Image (cartoon, chains in turn cyan, purple):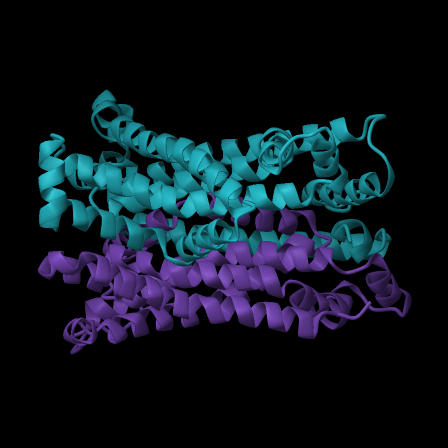
Length: 312
Length: 227
């Protein structure tokens, strides 16, 4: 049900007047809340120039925020690449012809989806810096405690997100028409070859929006590195806040940076989804499947329309 | 293993996670439902507000929200949830509620989207029928749409609850002595037993989240609206 068009009738003059009243009241309540927050902030001196002018100085950006952003993106980028690789590998194993391999990878995936990312990060970090065997290994590789926090962030992100991506890929393969696999088998490919060269590539394309959305999850979760002292954007923000005594302002700026990055990635995912839907509506494709897709398309259309409300 | 669990009060730490999750879930359900109603309402200003809330909160890291609750809301703006005078546990108790606040506002955005996906499972005829017998928007929402949306949205709501249970570990960022805090303690003092400690904590989370997954899939088939 595409909510907006059917939840209410096209409003008549009375309803329009009532909706206008609700709109005005809602705006007033929101503005009231905003004013309360602003008054509270003003009373606590949050609008003093000294709290905000640091953001006009290059030092703030080159010494705190940009290096923090770079370390955040480094961890996220490495984690994205590794999660994709391991996730696809896990999906192959979970669809293997050998039952024990399927079970083992199934247990792995379910286990790491159930454990919080932060727990995995703390475990990896503490093992690397405290466990005698691991400490010796780290020394022999020439790695320091600073490397340990980076490794811990990446390991935590990869274990969880590879498991999630494995399930995304598996869902993608599951939603392909059965004829794809049968056609592959009938031209003499082995079932492993069918998976590798026919099923998984198609699943990756159709699941691209979900995979891109997962990048948002990884970027957000990289902020957990703050807790294990990885010098990412939040840690730098904290330092900036105590250097200039403008904690609140610093965190608001950091939040804006995170929101902009993640919003851009979500928009990219939406764009890819829309493009794929337009492509699929072309002359190719047939039968029941297109009908399903049409419905899915209509549902999504409803979802994008709803921002505008019932203006008709 | 048992001696580790007793020595470091693992169960007490997990109990704090459970309390954080339970309180935040109830509050997030309330707030999420309100935001979902805003997003479904026929008033475009309210739609805009609901959509903006979801966009902003979903794209902000939970760690940032919870740290902000502590450093920004409490230390800078002086927002306190419990009386300070004569309360030796003031900081611990206040941090509990600040973490609840952070978890609530973050997960309310996801609850809102789960309810909206529940609304998507309802056939158009339901709301058309509701309107044809003369129910207004509020009435049809209350009597027809939302009851079915909650039943159709049980699986996504359950997924939010599972994520919420796991995310209670982030409360350690502002000094809540829950299981992530306790695990770090344990690993500092017993670096030799690292893997065992990890397994204890991990299995604890499997025990906490598994029943939710099983329960929601049972509930969603039991409560599914027969069509």
